Image (cartoon, rainbow, N blue to C red; front, side, top):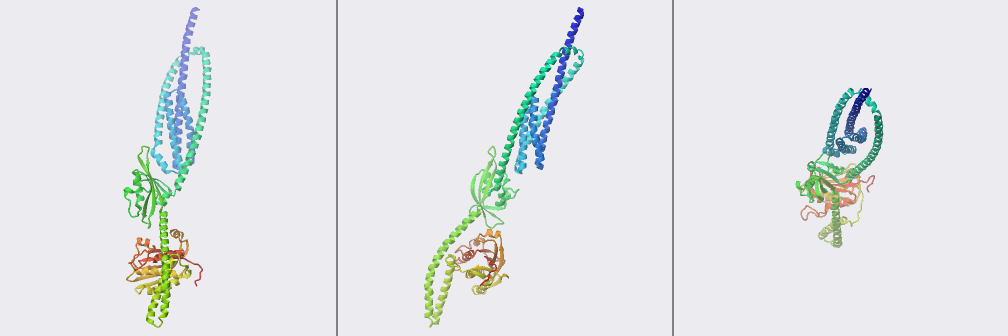
Length: 613
């Protein structure tokens, strides 16, 4: 009995030892299995997180290529799931600090990559091709994704290594546990109470842990939602600011060019196409070949070193530098005021330049016209004063010659001389009348005049005036052309132009008088400030003479300007004609005639349905 008890006691002891060993091995087996399951779960989460990242990246690329809002929704959906996935992975790897730190670093990189993708989507939505090109050129997204991929590969490799180790331990424990499973049954019974108690404690601990995890998840979700709202608001504010900036830039009246160090235009506004004739795709060199730039004097071309782009790329900063440009398709120069600023990178090196072109051509033309008007006003006052004084003297001369002619009735020879003096005085009186008209001190007597009939009468008067060596030809409008003008002033105007044509043909040639009804459009009216669009009658005098150079043509309407020799012209002819025509809301232009010489062309308003007296 004692031995049995001893045996039983020994057996129970051995059984207890076996049971204890079996229970220990069972616990270890469970732990190994849990670790394996945990490792597999972590690997699965890695896989899901990678799929989310690829999905976000694919959606961003799809939107960049097709601008389809479906891809934009996919991107935001994947973006919203990435942060919670990271949180779960970080929580699952708390027992491995190295993995946790690598995940946190990867989360920062992924956030940066999503920010780059969001910026790309914003630029694509705004149609900012230049911003997309600049963002793509930095290749920041590829660099970040390469780093994220490398981190994920390290994380996966470490989890797979742990999986291999834990799987091996689990198999070895299973074999040992199988061998002592029967012997450990009693031990399991003996420690059942302890296991139950431990399990209850573990359950309580697990429940507490789950509650803490749920609270942490709720807090994290609230923080993520708040951050997302802030990001959305910031993105909307940035979008509105960019829209306002783009609208302001596009509405600027000044032409703006932003160039890089190679002269390539990286940014321009619509005014650049209108003001400096820039076309998309052109560089500074191509733009320079279309025009020639001069200094403010208008005759000294700018050297390459003096060009605005070259100066600002050298680091110069300048404001309101005036230059003149001439294009092959434009006769008059364009005046520009240019400001330039160099652009520098973070290191202070010049990375480009910004140029602003302000067109002041109209202002310069206005200044020139004001100066011309002031000059004409001064000359008009001087002319009026001289004409009045001369008229007073002529009054005495005219009255004396009339008395002289009457007193020499019995002496025909002397009376003839007196008549010549009287005729000369009458011609002087006519000249004074023109001078007073030029000075705006002589009242006008306009009426409806048949331009065709007036031109025929003028042609008859021109024959003895011009001489036989000038062949006069008339080409008149078939329809009646009536304008409201002083007929004497019209005759004198045509006579002035015909005499100028005669002087340009000293050896004789052809003179053409023509009339034509014309319709002037808005473009012509904009080029001639005194004219409004409508129907006009044109009368012109064309010759086969030597014509005029552009410099002479620019000064032809200035009072007292003449190219004739001293004593052969006062220089008042064309200026008086121009003032006369302007008085009747018409224009006078000088162009090259079809005959090879000069064509003086007067355009006067056409009176519709009018009857001439």
